[in-house]
Length: 208
Ligand SMILES: CC(C)(COP(=O)(O)OP(=O)(O)OC[C@H]1O[C@@H](n2cnc3c(N)ncnc32)[C@H](O)[C@@H]1OP(=O)(O)O)[C@@H](O)C(=O)NCCC(=O)NCCS
Image 1: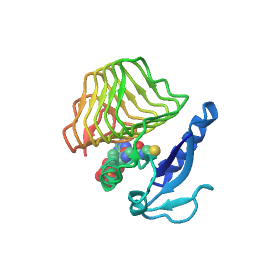
Image 2 (image 1 turned 90 degrees about the vertical axis):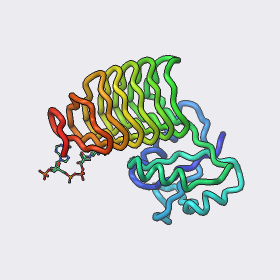
Image 3 (image 1 turned 45 degrees about the vertical axis):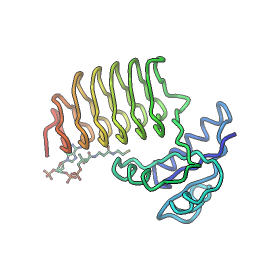
Image 4 (image 1 turned 120 degrees about the vertical axis):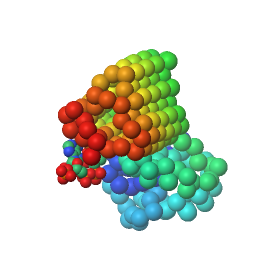
């Protein structure tokens, strides 16, 4: 059993704790120690908060860390605040996620949650979150720190840049590029490329 803790004790962090317990139910592999958090100090869902980022940087043993905050910019800052060489960032995959074939690649720290379906030639960067029931078609790429919220569908040859947020239930037609730092609103249907740092909403999605 390998030691693991979650950095971020908010909503997605708590869901990640559940996911780790569900992984262990299928094949015991993680010794879940608790959370680190820079704001929350008390116990969360029966698990201890082991300290803040300073405590994490002072951890003396090898420890696996899931950085589990959905906001891409916040997640990136959290990762850059960790300088402890004892920290390892595993790829976490829920047992009910279909990860597709051997051509797919996932960068360190990426979290694939329950009910997601990936097909072929899918490449995910580092610290990507793919949330519940999302489908990712052939030849899709997703850049570092991007977060795909629940129930999205990304179609073939879509390219999502780094630090993008794709809101819950969004649909992207095929062959589209969502450039770095862009946000796609919940429920949007994206029919055109999205510019860097733009926010698009609606059906069809337009900039706000
Ligand atoms: C698109 C989004 C990022 C915009 O957030 P924001 O920059 O704070 O924008 P605002 O809330 O100020 O909204 C700006 C305008 O867009 C509209 N809008 C916001 N989100 C929208 C959406 N998903 N669909 C349609 N219109 C939307 C607002 O009504 C507002 O319109 P108005 O100017 O006419 O009043 C956000 O609303 C969103 O959809 N986030 C996804 C959340 C999500 O998926 N959560 C899942 C958690 S698991």
